[in-house]
Every structure is written in structure tokens, then in C-alpha cells.
Image (cartoon, rainbow, N blue to C red):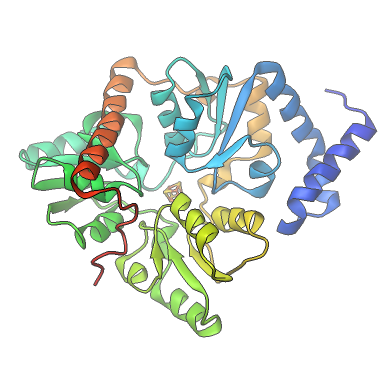
Length: 350
Ligand code: SF4
């Protein structure tokens, strides 16, 4: 594809405005301008909506994405789009969730990137758990494959996990696949929680030593943590919530310094949205999320290979969608009874 020098220059300048705060140079932006222009051109030509998870790199998030967010929020947003094609720049299970909710759209995933949580459990494992605990209800965090979602009673997100588990009829609940999130849940539910041994390799990396180091250097910093972290880390944090809840808290808080105990993509997004606030401390990169590049996005738009087009057998899709619908039903049931307090992760934490 041919673009004039002036168009390429204009595109490099546009990218530079968005990316200079992430230490991209104008030279870096010039190198990527041809690719981003081609992506913009194909987006328009094929009527594509590009969704990017908040853990994507800044060149994707601020260079080509139409919407940024968490996996489930983006899949729901895609429901209202007039686009013919949804390209989900993220790990495979998120593209599957978009397809489950939007079966009539073509959903593209640029890479087949896995996830330590989603890959830790299979549909067969869930069937075996059901046999072992015949009286238990089964709740799956949305970070699971379509096949696993199809086997469970309900899904949950990191923002509504507590409500969903509490609203289950059963007193015994198998919570999968995130062991650490399940251990955190145990602290504020009366249900008997049976855990699966999956972990997010990014959030399990954080330790109380990281928190202590920031408290020492930045005593005024507010520490925000994701519920996929170890309970000891949550206990030492000031706020616990999903990626979107963390960003919302940052919007609302009067503090000027924050540590965000999560993936580096989210801290980049926070820096972009709040240049007036200082994000301190450490963050970790998710190697799966970083498999996504401008190059594989362009390839998927230009001429997708069969494995870049999400396909889910209809019998599995329908059952997985039912588990997602059940999540909303249970959330509503809980809120009807107890109100809609939106962040339970820090309550009753001891
Ligand atoms: S950050 Fe954790 S949960 Fe998210 S894709 Fe990476 S490994 Fe999976």
C-alpha cells in the first residue's frame, strides 16, 4: 500500500503526540507510521472495530484501538457496534468472550496468545470436579476458555465475584480457576469455597515487600491492588478492585501519588488519562498480552489466517452464553437483597 510522504509524516506526528509520554521517539513513530496508516485504512474499508485490553502496549492502545477496557466490558460494548468485524487485541479467551456475546459478528484475534489462568483448566477438569463435589455450584472467573464457561453454572468478573458467589443457591461453591482470587473471596463469604490451583502469573509476582518499599519511599501514595494478587498483598493495600474499578478510584481520589499493583499496561493507561497524578512503584508485564503487535493486527485485518478467526461450536457457545447471563441474574439477585455496594474486596479483610 502506498502512502505519500506528507501523509506518513502527519501520521508519525499524530502517534508522537500520544506516545511521547511513554518514551517513544519521533523516529520510533516514523517507523510505525506505515503500519498504523494501513491499519486505519483497512479498519474503514472493512468496517472493523478494534478493541484493546488495558494491558496492551501504548502503540496499540493509543495508536490504533477504538476502545480500551477490560475483557468483559469491551465484549458488552461490542454488542452495540455497527461494525461488521470486531478485532480483539488481547489474549484468546477474551476474543472468545466477544464471539460468545456477538455470534453474528466476525471476531478476529491477531494472536493465539494463551493465559496462565485460562490454560490451567479444561472442560474435562470441570466435569471431574462436579463428580467429586456433586452438591457444589460452580462459578468460573471470565478468564477461562469458552469450553470451560460452557461447563459451569455461572461466570463472574473480578468486580462481581463476591455477589455471584453469595447469590448461588448452594452453600458449597467451586470457584475456578484463580486460586488467589478464591482465597480472597473466602475472607468475606460464608460459603464453603473449593479452589482450583490456577494463578495469574503477573499478579502472583507482587509481594508485601513491593508494598512496603513504596510505603517507605512514598508515604502519601495510595496503594491499589487487583484481587488476583495474594491475600497478604491485598491486606496491605488501600483499595482492591478490578482494572476498571482501579481506574475509577484514581479518577475519584484526591491523592496525587498511587501505586497500582497490576500489569504495566494499566499503569500506562493511568499515566495517559491522569498526567497530573504520579504512578509510583513497580509493575509487571504479561508475556501473553505482549504477543499482540501492530504487525499481527495488520495481518489479521489484511488476510486473516483460519486461526485468527474465532470459531466456537454453537452448542458450546450457547451454554457459555447461558453462564454469562446467569452471572447477571445472580448479581441482580444479590443486589435486590443487599443493595449494590460495588466493591466488597476490602471489606472484612483481616
Ligand atoms: S495478566 Fe494474568 S490473567 Fe491477564 S492474560 Fe496475563 S496471565 Fe492471564
